[in-house]
Amino acid sequence: MGKTYERIDGRLRTFMEQQPIFFTATAPLVADGTVNLSPKGLKGSFAVLDEKRIAYLDFAGSTAETIAHLRENGRITVMWCAFQGPPNIVRVHGRGEPVFRDDPRFKELLAHFPDIDPTRHGLRAIIVVTAELVRDSCGYGVPFMSYDEDRDLHGKRFSREDDTSLSAYFTKKDHIAQSIDGLPGLPLPLPPGDF
Image (cartoon, rainbow, N blue to C red; front, side, top):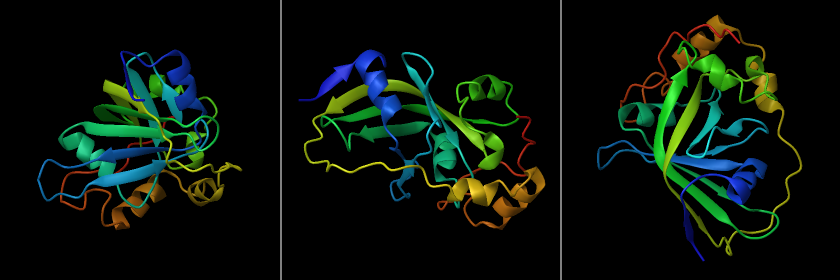
């Protein structure tokens, strides 16, 4: 049934890269803090960097809980499940880090996402996760569902923004600069996007 992997390669890597959606889970250190679970999609926004590291693009949204939790403690679990083909669930438990637009590593990391136009989605950061434990499980309870296509609403909404208006949008939101639990979230104003 379940198996532990030493590295992300071969069949495991192919499975992760082919899924149109994955989920991230993070939490603050305080016992009564808010656990955050987020769906992530958009074809081309996920990449396997090497046998131990994965990354995904963090786009504009209504909160920045994942960023806040990673800045505080780095803990993250990323999960994929097969909605088509053979049943399978894969989880990467590890340490994550938001790499912001003014970080010298940003441009090099962005090169791993050649099919994404970052100006269309309000790109805030690139989340890099170093795997500490990689496991799969059967996925027998996951239903069959079909993938038709990505929604175009996010790109339509945020392609109208430049760096200044995007920072203004984030400033108006309650849980962008600070998480629900009061942790530092996205640093504002947003550094310029030199894409």
